[in-house]
Image (tube, rainbow, N blue to C red):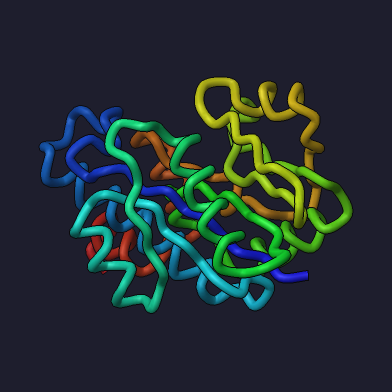
Length: 206
C-alpha cells in the first residue's frame, strides 16, 4: 500500500498566536521551523511515497520546495479541515489508490520511524488517528484507499474523530508524533524529546 502525507501550513502571519509574549516575526519563524522539521521527517519516512504541503504562504512554499516537497495552494480562510481535504483530493487525483496520512504541521520533535510505525498500524483500519500529547487533540488522521478522510481537526478533535468512526491507533512509543507545539510549555516539552534542526536553531541557538 502506498501512503501520501498531507500537511497543511497556515499563513505565517496568522500562525502560533498562543506564543503571544513573542513578537510577530518570532512567531512566524517558529511556525516555519515547526513545519520544516515536520516535513523533513515525513520526507525521510520510507513508508510515505509523497508529502504534499497545503499552504498559501510563499515563504512556506519556498522552504518546502528546498526540501523537494510537493505543495499546492489552499483556499484563503477556508480552515484546516478544508486544507486537509484539498490535499487528500489532490493526492488521489495524481496517484491512483493511495492511502492518506493527514499530519499536523507543528511536530518539531517527530521522527521518521514514528511515522513509519503509525502508518503501518493504520493499515489495519479504514480510518485511524493518533491523539496528541494532551489527549484531546489529533496529530495524525489516516484513511485507506477509497475511504474518505473526513477530518475533524480543531478543539476536542480526538473525540470528534472517534465519534466519526475513526479508530485510535496505538503504534508503540511515538512521543514526538504526539507532541504538537502550540505554547511555550509545549515547546520545552519538545526540547526534552529532541528538536529537529530548524526548530533547534531558533529555540536553542544550535
